[in-house]
Amino acid sequence: MKQYVISKATGYASLLMLYPPVSRAMTAEDTEHLCIGMGFFLGIIVASLVALFLTRHGRNKYQQMSLRLKLAQNNSTVAEQAMQTLAKEQQDSQDLLEERVQERTLELNIALQELESANQELERKNVLDELTGLHNRRFYDQKILAEYRRSRRNLTPLSLVVIDIDHFKSVNDNYGHLAGDQCLIWLAKFMKQSLKRSADKAFRYGGEEFCLILPNTDVEGALLVAEQLRLQITEQAFSFQEIEIALTISCGICTYQQEADIGPEQIFSGADKALYQAKHHGRNQTQQYILTE
Image (tube, rainbow, N blue to C red; front, side):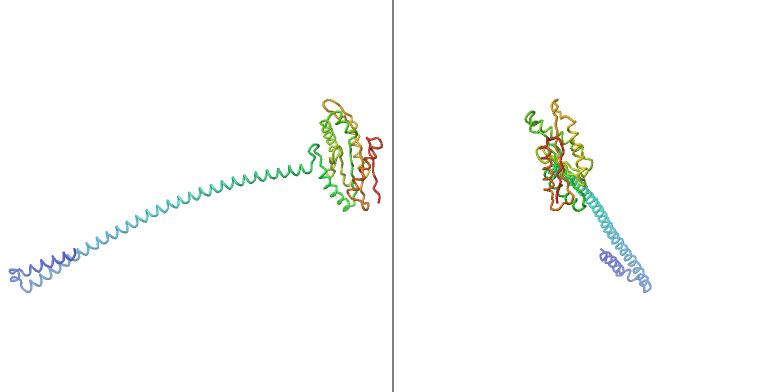
């Protein structure tokens, strides 16, 4: 376009100079003035063309920059929206994860509590007699060994009281086994009440036979506990279905005081022998077996 305009302007100037009347009329001075005018004219044309070019180039460049800026703004907006969407999704995922973790934690705590309760119930069943609520024979075997070792270590006396209900068979025969069970429960209640120290333990050894482990208790202390229990049973009638049944117990005591070659089995055997003597001598009494070196 620029070349076309320049060529046109140059052509017109050349034709004007070649026109005969003009050429004849021009003097050297006129020719010089004409060349200067044509140069000035051509300069104006070239300057206008350059200005036009620069204007169009600047406008194109501005349009390109505006387009790039608009695209950049659009991309920035899209990126910002994407970041917001991503952040929201991450927050939702985090909230969902925390909620699931809390649910699993709660479920785990519940399961642990249930397991602990089950273990406690299992442990309770392993050491307690289901009928009377006293400690059972299994726990007696563990406890008597532990207290025996403590007695030897601390050089303290250890007493064992073996208890049996007199004529218990007649209760079952005359009133039924339900009455017999209630009789055992009734006696267990008084045995628990007779123990004043947490170290003292009451056990259902088997059937109608019970025993008391009395750590750090000498013969006199064991005799006092056994006699208080025996007298209390004698004074209280057992009631079953509005029928009062008189009951008595016999007690045998054996106290370990660091005798040589004596273990838990010999202590129980001595108390059992004392119980046999109490029954042999008429029941409803307490007898003592003395261990010998």
